[in-house]
Amino acid sequence: MTQAGGYTGGMNDEIVVRRAQRGDLARVAQLAGALVRMHHDVDPSRFLLVENVEDGYARWFERQLASDEAVILVASRGPTLVGYAYGTLEDRNWNLCWTSTAPCTMCSSSPRHAARGPDAS
Image 1 (spheres, rainbow, N blue to C red):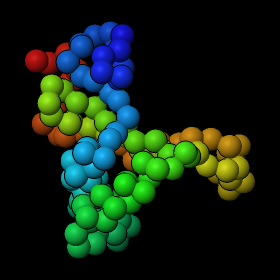
Image 2: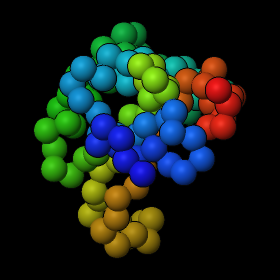
Image 3: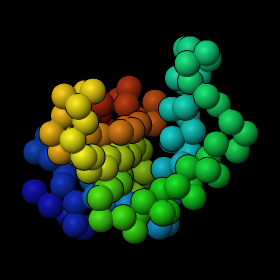
Image 4: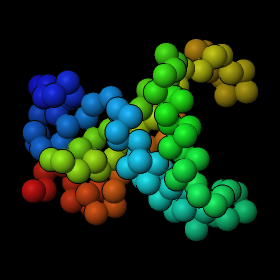
């Protein structure tokens, strides 16, 4: 089932997944920053946290919108953007035993909405 150019799934038509647009990037960057902070809190020696991480992500995602080898998807519940996924096409990687692939590099959702699940109203 589609709505407004996005996949809404079969269980609950409240959540719409679609390609990100430039106007979504501030919220996507906010979610990315929250993901970085969560990782950094768990293991600060492994995960870098820089000042103004959201500004950096907003600039990065804006460049990625123009790339034919990247995709940014957003999930919204009504007017609220509650999650995103970002992935790129990657060349063969002998270390990871990949042929050409499209891994999901980052994926995040608003904790408040994730806890509710797709069937919650």
